[in-house]
Length: 302
Image 1 (tube, rainbow, N blue to C red):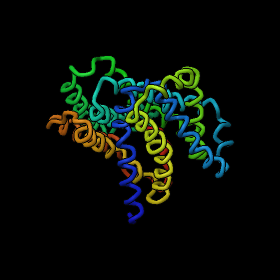
Image 2 (image 1 turned 90 degrees about the horizontal axis):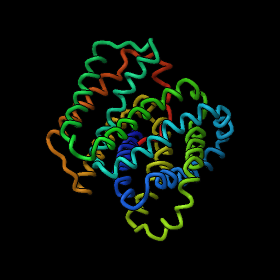
Image 3 (image 1 turned 60 degrees about the vertical axis):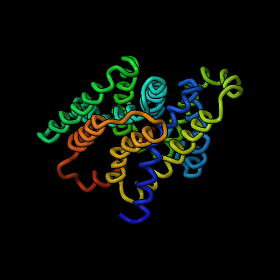
Image 4 (image 1 turned 180 degrees about the vertical axis):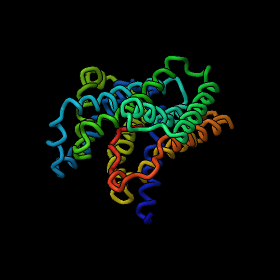
């Protein structure tokens, strides 16, 4: 991989590893719905000019029903659940739970596509990965309450399901167009609930949560997609997806050093098991050249 590729890779590992920290700070004073609106609205304002300049927006909105479904599954519902859950659980714990997304994605892929065979390695990977999730949940069973855990479970299922919508109905839609159109649709969804509260929010929110919300939109949403698509162009789609295995580690480190969250050896064991299980359960034997060169779908996580 070239020097530029490594720089983009490192940048993406950080950019999509810090949202959990920023969300944790933002929800101290900003409601979950308002935070999602701010993130989607600012992100849309920044990405729309790029999509328009590339003439990708019109092609993106043509399949409006799958796009709407994708927006709900990949933005609206998971970002709302994630923001609400982080009012009760640590950001590092959240990052580790979301790391189990590839495990659920492997199961969903098998249930929806019989061609996705469950080899011995994949079955072993699923068992190892879910064992890591069990260790993690067992260690944190008393923290945050069952509602927060259910919300994080919903985020994982949504994140695992979103790419299937792209793969089946939006695979030919330009990537910047999908990202921009989805953010616009997400902002429209949350506007009726959030916009009336913004004047009061602007008067009372302090600098820390406000800056966290803006950084979440500018850095972790708009800039993240520009960097991610540049990374895909530089190293290819398959290598680019490796960042999803590094982001949780960044979330744990930041949670420990910045927020003083508890990190123990059990946390390390759980992360190792989840990481190993995700890699084993999602690896392919010998991908065809066309498949290997394919770009991953643009997702809005985390």
